Amino acid sequence: QVQLVESGGGLVQPGGSLRLSCAASQSVFSVKAMGWYRQVPGKQRELVASIATGGSTDYADSVRGRFTISRDNAKNMAYLQMDSLKPDDTAVYYCFADYVGAYRGRHWGQGTQVTVSS
Image 1 (cartoon, rainbow, N blue to C red):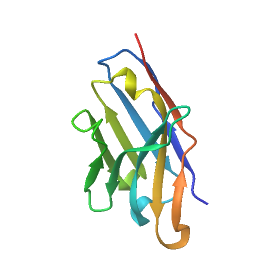
Image 2 (image 1 turned 90 degrees about the vertical axis):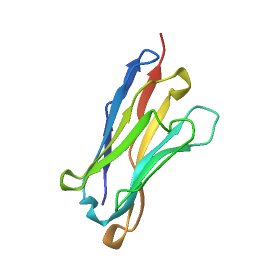
Image 3 (image 1 turned 120 degrees about the vertical axis):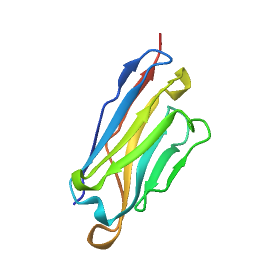
Image 4 (image 1 turned 90 degrees about the horizontal axis):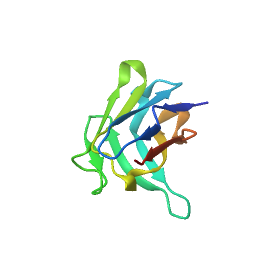
């Protein structure tokens, strides 16, 4: 069984920064991609950022240049550095990991709330 646990959410003022972390219970060496989605009430979950095994990254247009995704395979961790936050970034952020092999499939974290408000 794979468990993903997010941390680092909270309340921040516009222009501020937060760093989200995602800890995986199983080795991420067999993860072909991991990253974050976000969701606000009444809207579909949207992809924020992802990082592949080789390190290639993908970002939503709305966050490109402000957010940076990274992963540490040795620690089974992924990170999302969020800078220049805007009120529109307010959402629940969900970590995901696409495993291959024994744990094949997409796994999700429980979500962490990010609120950007003055």
